[in-house]
Length: 73
Image (tube, rainbow, N blue to C red; front, side):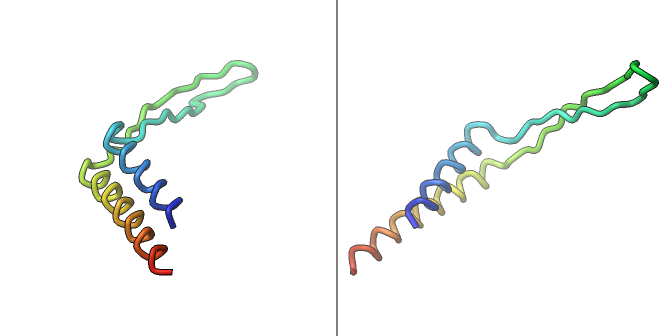
């Protein structure tokens, strides 16, 4: 349970720091023999700050809820 909570907290912090995922898509436009024309497109997937905050708070809640349960045993 704590491991999942720590992963969620790390993902929340990363979402707040980076704000999205960037990647490049490479594709071949034309190819004849050994000659090739290629293109590269830059794409971005934005992650709203509120999503990062929700994941971070959820991680903290899961972490502390796990501590409470293990204390009752």
